[in-house]
Amino acid sequence: MTFCDIDEETLLVIDPDIVFWALIPKGEDINSKIRHEILPLYGRVKRECEEEMHEFRFRSPLAVIYMNSVSRCNLNCSYCYIPQEIRKSHQQMEKEQLFEILMKACEYAEEDGSSRKLTIVFHGSEPLLMKEEIFDAIEEFEDRLYFGIQTNGTLFREEDVGFLKKHGVSVGTTLDSPYPEIHNSLRKTWDGMGTFEKIVEAIEWFDGYQRLNVVTTVTKQNVSQLSEMVSFLHDKNVTSVLLNPVRGTQESARPLMPGKEELIKYFISALKRAEELTRKTKKQIIVGNFANILVGIIAPTARKLMCDISPCGGGRCFFAIGAKGDVFPCGEFIGIKEFYGGNIFRNSISDIMDSESFRMVRDRIVEKTEHCNTCAFRNICGAPCPAEVYSMQGNFYNPSPYCEFYEELIRFAFKMITEDKVKYFLKEDVLNSLEYKYRLGE
Image (cartoon, rainbow, N blue to C red):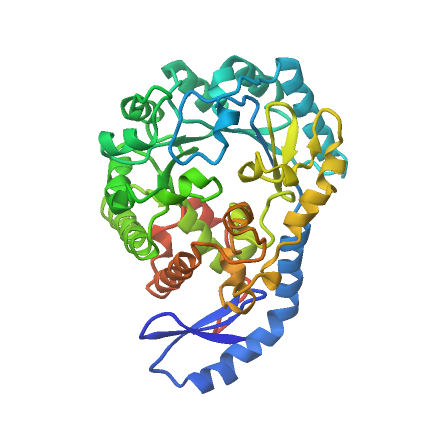
């Protein structure tokens, strides 16, 4: 185990490999606390935690397939991770091709004899450009697959929202600022028209739908508005928001990456605003990427956002399929030819999962990554994102450009645990699904 300061009042004792931890007030007899309480408990649970963490990190099965079934996009957002030449193209799957892939997914899930269902997420460029085919697929396969859709939101009609609610589809849409001029400067059409009004209208149609996530991509232009963004979405009955720092996978996005001091300051302010609103109004709004960090501390193997795990979920728990059927470990790798894993129309899912490019992503673990291999938080943040690190630095085994940001968020998460505020940052159903495996004093 190792020691780490959380703040002036609290010391963290942690085994980074299994995320066994204890928080100790610095005014207490620390040596006695460790010798008489922490070490005996650690000795009893260490082996079981090691086995569970190893299983989670290296044997979690394929769970999600991202379907980029149409290459083109009706928007030209400033920071998009998909290369512009792909978004300008007009490749689109036929309905029969889409159904063929979904059948392959069903058959793959049944190969191990389990009753698990894979999740299909219709993703970028803009899936609603082939809305009819996608909605037909949802109706045809909803008893065999779970579905999600990630969309820029501009092509929604009110009846589409009703369809997605009726079928329980998870939906992600995008809004970057509560101020139209800021949002419109980042997320605009090819001819420069803004999208703010249309997206807000769609969010209002969803009106508190529990499976809606609004994604805000954090850039230099909107980082100072994150608290206001949380308040705006809370007023719109949004229950979950992802505040995602812009990825530097594409060179055009890198000038928009916010400075670490600003990002830390304003992100934590947004978290405090979410807590305040949840506490005062009894109506929750959750910041999903922070919630995943909290879960990564209190229940490490219950995490759902697989970017925060080492190795990341790319080429392991999920992969992405392009409009021509080309497969990559993750959408962030689309367009990086050395990470091509095969073609879904020519190769089996098993062969794609065993491809050299997929194995390369799975082999990138924190134990091999510079700086991360000595960090106390290495198996909480997971050193994301390999595609970003590779694109920006040409070295798979460097730490994230957002390393210090993740460290401060994790410290803040431990502070919230110390102050018994976890209930304000996790959805009630998540909290109710957890039970203690071990606890000091028991």
